Image 1: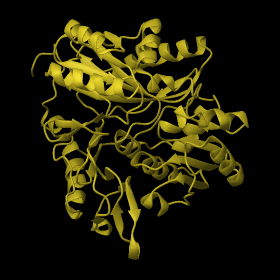
Image 2: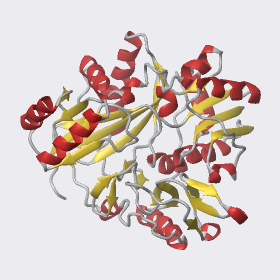
Image 3: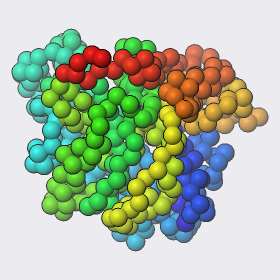
Image 4: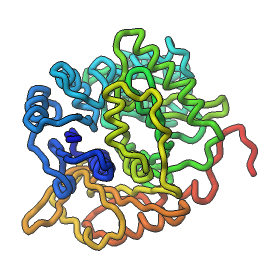
Length: 425
């Protein structure tokens, strides 16, 4: 099987590394890729959001499967163009991808499907936003309705800050969704869907804030770990039964069946599981940890989903133990990241390094070229061992102004994560 992966981030590097372990996958290409991906597979200077160019490249390569990594190609209709010429494609159609590209649409689907989620109001003016904020009270949750690369959400006790974020979204031509705040720890669950059937991967937890202790502005994600020992028994089956499958059925009823990854962002609250949001692709940086633990062949799984053959698919197998990935970001991130800084020590890291915002400089050096630059993935029999390996790898690197959190998975390691309503042990 020959596979083309679209995208240029750490998520795509993780997907490619996992595909390389599938004996059925003979050849992998990436477009546009990044410096690290280019060290593993051939990369092509083709925009992943240009449907015609992607179709042309896929046909030139005679690829058997296209895997879409980021959200932008989905919103641009790339999957529709590929399917129109008969190419097996893993990723939802442009219409189905509205589950991510419009939070208001996602709320509508969840309401019709009876999926438990936060109460919400859609606002298009400052007056409507103010009324919704007052209705729900603090902490205030304000979300840009459109795509915002994981950074369109503000959660704050400051009403003025919440209103200012809403106004910035209005100024950008978007509407906002204002929600009640959900208590409880958050969980990311990737559900692989083929339109009607679904298979869940291992749950993970990511860390959105830039600084330790979950403070500072939101980012695209500074690290993640898996599995989550603190989840109640039967959690994954509950999410499949009460969230994923009802949404998939609703999409079929609307004539827009969902094929790809339904990323379920969840809160485990005192009232049970509630959906925070859906994404329509693998999450970054959760993918880096989750796929490190996947023992089953990824290429065969994604091809089965792309060709509606998940019914009766064998149960997935997982490596024992834990995985932790720690993201290293550039100086200035998540504001204006500084570019051109050299990253050294990569050859000495005794753990997988997955690249994101890097480019090759002179003499084969790696330079910063984005916000989140790379992730170091640690694995171990215990969460503590996985954390130790990941952070040992990060400590080996040298980057002027580099940023990373030191507490990825730390609360879970200490047993400090508490589900609201549960008695303390």
